[in-house]
Image (cartoon, rainbow, N blue to C red; front, top):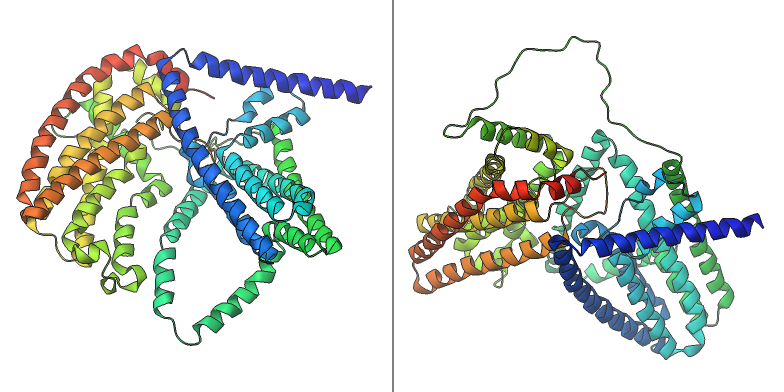
Length: 557
């Protein structure tokens, strides 16, 4: 009887949470931002649907081919693809993932079982889960068409495999958030993550290098390595799931059942690790970053702030704050070196791109600096399109201070422009070492392009920072760093800017005179600077009109 009452209470709690999420969605549609978010969700969902259905069709065709050709063990390739995407996509594309903070529900009398199921429910609606499930369904259909007798067994195996992926994704998020809750581990993990992203850039060059270094015994070495890796992948979840299906296809049901049992063991282990983390959260674990009281006397001497010539004191103060915050962020500093790293990759990609007649920068080295300048502007997108995201609750101090928001936004734009200038200078020096010093006309044309592109990005970024702000929670993992509206609009702006700049340089190259591009881009720069000045003069009024929305969004717990 008590178990029945407990189940009824759990159902009631889950129903209440679902109703609350629905009402939040419906009420959000009353605002312009909510309507724009809905439109962006529709476009993103359409893109995901195309990718999911296309991937499911491809997986189904692959599974059908492997079963009919007598190579069911090759389904491991498909399952490894599903596994890697399921776990990597939420990390790589946080702009399109939405994992609400379920810990907010702990302030209510919510049972642990309900809390655990809510966390699983949030993960089940993640885009990676939806796409991974569609692709797994495609494999199921492919196996069913090839050998209908395998359909029930394959369904059981793939459901177990999907449960493992869902639990692993949530376990990684839960434990990484635990490590991100403290600044020291947060900085270490951020640096490791950026280094991992940089290392991915080396995959293509290294692959091409080893292809070029092919020799008579290379195939034997490759086969030996594959022979070593095949047993290793066979004891991991994707390999176990594939082996369970393959053994059943060969009528080795007991062997296949043993693989399924091992897969279930992985599910239990991952589920237990997630249970340990969620139970600690449920019992009220709260990691604080409050500094310890120091016994040493504090230095109470006053220090003068920075003074930017030609700018007011508030602009100088906010500029100093932004620079100091940036210098304290190791991951952000590593991100800013990406343009130079990419130049090195293109220069030494495959150990010498000059060997490839099709390499773009090898054929047109004069375009190396314009390409690097454009990439440096792209790196600033996360900063420029969410000016107040890092301020979070500090936005209230801006409103309380006797300073016009025009000066605050101007200081933030000056910070971004200063970073852009330093990066462009570093890129120019790097291009000089790697490709030869850029010609004067190319350099001037590139700077004219930046003079056009930067104000356009600042205009869009300032407006989106007011109309579609997003709090940056550096202790979270796998959550959106910008609203989908901001992501889609910024993508459109970048396509427009790159398209216009590319067209100007194409015309100039066609006539063999880069001064033509300079003239075109300077004219466009005059228009973009006028638009930037107009928006900057009105940004104070917009910030005052939307102060409740800004404060509510950025001060959200």
